[in-house]
Image (cartoon, rainbow, N blue to C red; front, side):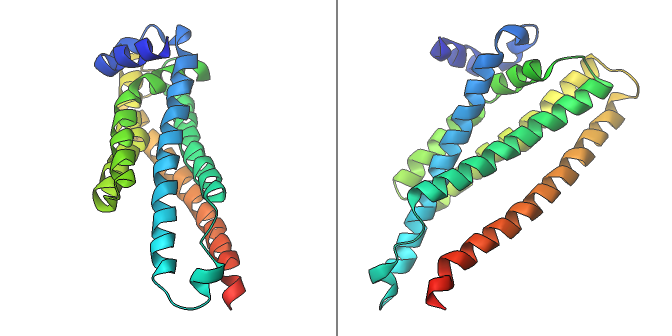
Length: 209
């Protein structure tokens, strides 16, 4: 059933409007699938990078330390990417609720998930490139998929929702409000995660100090 859903909305993503009440589960599956593929791609790249760096050194480092475990990298990246997507959904829901339609969080999830099909395909291409050790092109394609999921698709969706179901203020200004809210929340989130990541890096290398 999900395969049929995926093919249909890959061809006609905008047809989700009017059907969002029935498709939120598939939309959520699309979100999890996208997060999983991105996480897998980043995890493979990070492990390859650590292995290349460590095995290129001499002495005790490459004998006793093989970099962070794959499970720890995967878990950290999965939580990171999932929280970013959750922030996108939350910001869209709040701004749309205030200035657009009265769609529930589940309906916004359905709309967003249906439009993620393109980003999922792009992230799969990135994963294939990284597995083939084409890291430069793989990371470029991965960045495109993340930009699609976090920036371009949400901007398109919030524009449609605010224009179609405008209330309170002009859709242009409500769109600016969305951009401001998401930018502030995202900056705070990245700041917190940067501190956490730095602590992890320090812990990883403390053994060698």
